Image (cartoon, rainbow, N blue to C red):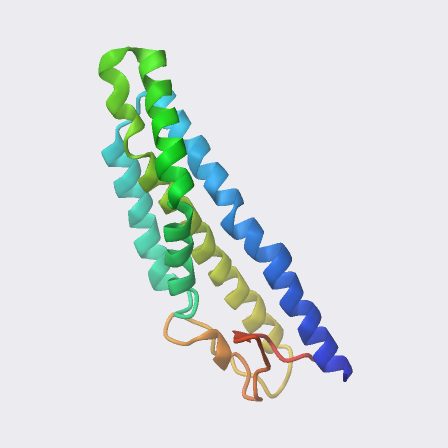
Length: 174
């Protein structure tokens, strides 16, 4: 195994086992915390969801095209059986216990908020990865600054981009 292949394999494992869990699992907890804060402070669901998904739409325009499906899939995964069957009844019961019987509707909207935060975090992560790769590519003479809203991450360098298990990795530089 060459040094470049070993570096690419290490980068792949770093992305899969370190960076993706931090951008997938931690945002679910932040979304749940935001939903609980919304319930406790009696904030309107409309304003939280409209502002949040407005930010998601803006970030969708700024993020690389290859990260947009991953981001929306992470939002769909976040609202799986645990959020619907476990978190929704708990937050509805928390709202009823904190503010009375008529406040039970404050527990609704939690699933939308939990879905919104991982999407936002993954889009921000995609923009950061794109920025870092284009910055690294600009240091080499044979590179182009091709990471933007209209191009995918596979076009960061003119040289062939290595792929490990279908994930595009930046080419190793000596």
